[in-house]
Image (cartoon, rainbow, N blue to C red; front, side, top):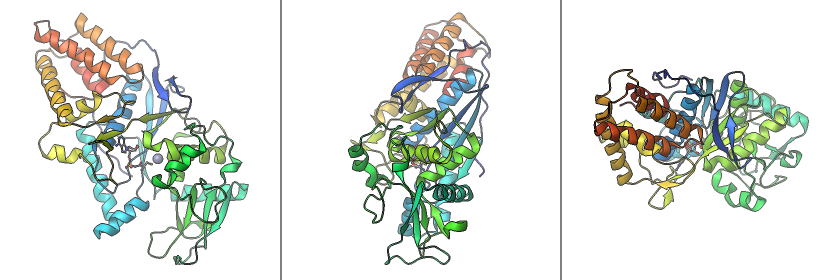
Length: 425
Ligand code: 5CA
Ligand code: ZN
């Protein structure tokens, strides 16, 4: 699919010291270096399900992985960034039905709005933006392979559910008991998994499953639901997790560097996409590190489309809020700490933006001062240390305050704020 427009990233004149970026890996529980391979870092970011507009939780996630990419690029690496869009799934179909519009139109409208939000926030676009629908032929091949290998099995569609023309009467599930790596991403106990599975798109009570946690791979087409040709599987559509397994494998290959998303995706989504990839191509096939953005909340609850407690990027923009202030509000929080959106956070970000812009206005283009280079060094060091954006913001605050007190401003810092933090002054 087409993606959103890119924005130029200034190259910083002062050499990076080559220390690798380190991030927290949920699977190992530690902070690990992610240095790419052969000069390229490969990143898969789980994209939106386009049934409602981008809220600040989504924005926090995409800005976090944007900062990771900027840190990699600054360290001299090329980056291959792949992102999916779940352009067919239960929540999208339900919302379209509720609102009386075609699901394709709802998806197209929300994807366009998401692009406009990402452009305004200066998030770098992926190299490959891939729709779930586009990936169906790969999913079909994958599911057929798993059935042939005996790691997937068929479950009859309940009799009271009418089938679409051309659908077989059977859904397909992965048999988790064949996969010793199951659990390696989240490290959760079965109880923890069972606790959230139903709330997060799973179907633990489906009759005929071998294990309540077995994930759906292929849903036989039901009358009135969208469906696609599934070769030997008959008409139907893929389960949610398989789209990310196959898209990542096709565009990034084996053992890519990072899979990213919010902590709400740790289980089941990232666990299942990894175990399905392992079932398809063996261990060490999927991400080397799983990086998760903590949840952004509002009024004591996770901000979520299903709950409807949303602050939308597009609404803030329409109200005249500078997108760079929104971006700074997000960067002022560490990605591993849950936080709540408040008006105060936005107000402080606006004040910070003003302070930085006043300093930037005094800077001669591309000028380098000693204060400028130490500021850059501090920013790089903070970002390499598990994307410590609040620490990087402190460094720029110190610079701007010193400039306000009469020290000459350095254009280098203005470029660094752009290249590393994605904030245009
Ligand atoms: N399409 C799937 C991933 S394959 C999906 O989860 N879509 S989503 O639209 O629900 O979420 C998009 C991204 O935003 C995901 O990475 C999700 O983890 C993240 N996200 C959702 N809500 C929040 C929140 N309140 N705070 C932080 N990140 C969030
Ligand atoms: Zn995903």
